[in-house]
Image 1: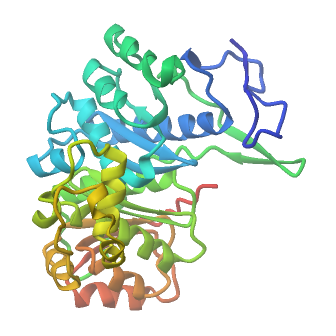
Image 2: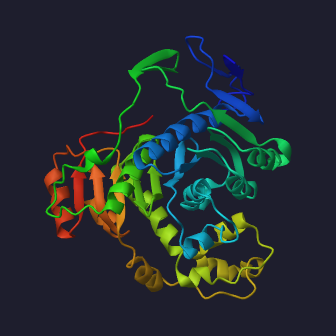
Image 3: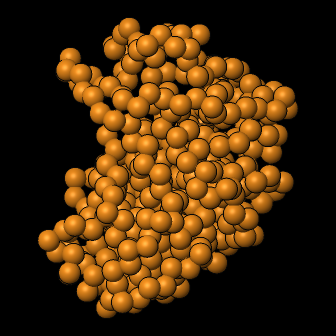
Length: 391
């Protein structure tokens, strides 16, 4: 197939809409179910590149959860602890490696992953399909599907779930084009290879990158390569735990992503794990309620008396002191940035979310201030020399 007509573009008034390759080549994708739209394919092609590169860089199955052309989460197949299985709502499932990767990717920011586009580096198996079957998701892209997985996924959304198969051998043209306001832009495709060699220029007093930190920094940098800029990414245990996308200032990226990383860790707090949810509460409602519970707004919810809608008994609030004490135990977090940090305030904010390892391009006139701030806290930072803007 050389072109695929789409229902409409970004919005219903934007017609006609289609995807095709300018030189008339065959499209590298096959739609196995549903009718993916314009934004679906933007998510599909960006997320596929991300997981394909994660697999190549780490040797592990990889997955991503995309929303509006940026990853809500990305991960590789590192085994899950019992606590993570519980907060990702997969403690009742048998997970294959690729299913584990998707559970991690989806679990990083479950609020943002609601209605996501899923991407897998490997063939989608039954275990991953069963995980996806019970989540709210728009579609999936993978290099293949087992017969069992395909049957399960085709039953989603009353048979309309979008299932796309991509040819993993497809290599795009070296030059890419994009039109804005009728003007054609041309640039070389960003085929930069991200690996451990990028982490050799360590500029801080501390020179200690653990093997886990190297893996997580590579995950963060590859994730940033396919995140709308400005962006930063916090990573730990083989997955992104906070992505701050599309902000106009670096510190707002760092705060946004840091807040998501904090929420990810607060969900693991024993007091949160013990919340007495009613059995009939759906997973999305649990996610929303947990998000409110760990926020500073929960006292208002208690005063409104709405707790009975979600809990079998009235939970005690998670106090600011309890949150601060729990977050103080978060450590070993890695942080990547798609461009240089202009001031040390980013490092100060990152430290509050357990960051110990950093990779960023460097090149700011205030690099000395950023390095000094890292040294103050014993952090290890590498200058990659490479910017990763994505628009």
